[in-house]
Length: 239
Length: 261
Image (cartoon, rainbow over all chains, first blue to last red):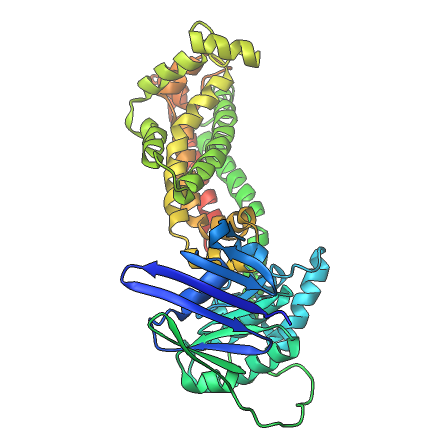
């Protein structure tokens, strides 16, 4: 079976050396470690936002970076979705536009907006589709960012500390939402966090990072429980 | 309340172009109205309307051309990583520093059919660009260009590169990132550059005089006509119209750049 993601890269920046190798299967994998361990840099290399010095990266078996052969597939062609720490939504476009712009699998404007609306419903953000990101709370913005990341039918979703800027109650609520939406979508995901509780709660696999190296990898044991009822998650946040 | 405000903002945005047109029309109408009241009659209309219309024929295309080329150049300078960027910016900025007569001299060297370069250009294009309105447009464009270019470069460099990166992760090609993300987010700075460029095009005098001449009914813009009619009463009317045109243009372009985010 082909791994969803295979990474073997090195990157030297100033005094810091990144040298990591790992593979990710379906479900949510977590890169866990302290700040400065190289987690976010690794995510940027996978997204194609930065280039490694040596190594290869393959997404679903397709090699997107191969330094030996000077291969570097552009970020746009990697078919990834990404959630950033601050959302990074387009501030001058509506929430619906932000998500609709990410839809790759439909060509017509109406079709793209319909898909975008369905994703906003799935993350409980349909109520502010016509608003601009600047008028949303941090939690609402991250819901929209999650919808945007998944709306383009990606092969892989990358989440770079998506909850670290949020208050505890919102963070707890969004943890459940992120896990539920990503698992139900069937898209493999790689999440970066320095929060041990978050890594346990969200991850199926936790890959530990320290000083630019992978120091361990373990599967998170989860109690078997009945499937939760299907349906769009509701929002209890206020604007 | 927020939803209502957002809808109002969206509607306001969709009608920006209409607001701009109305502003310009009201401004020009106001200018003529006030000028008429001041002058006490419309006897000056024949004297004033010619230079006024020529000024519009020169300033509008000059601002558009300088705006498009200036923003494109500013984008390349802000985003490009190639040697000689600063040299290019310096060359593009020369019209700010050089006396208008020097600009006019070089433009004549390039455009006049009597020179080597100008003769070649005239043969290739099949059109003469001096002592007609095209010469005036070129002179005004050259004068306005550096303001548009420099403002665009600064504004584009000020756009958060992380937002552009986020747009790339959703599959937008680079040209769409430029059109849908970078330029809209830089619009306030770009609008400021266009405003100054437009004002510069409206008031261009030295290079226009050298390249376009001062031909009544053909290349005599308001700036040239004011000097020609310095001892006549029309001067006041034209001065007022020019001032009001400048204020209207600045208000209109400023409205375009107002943030809605």
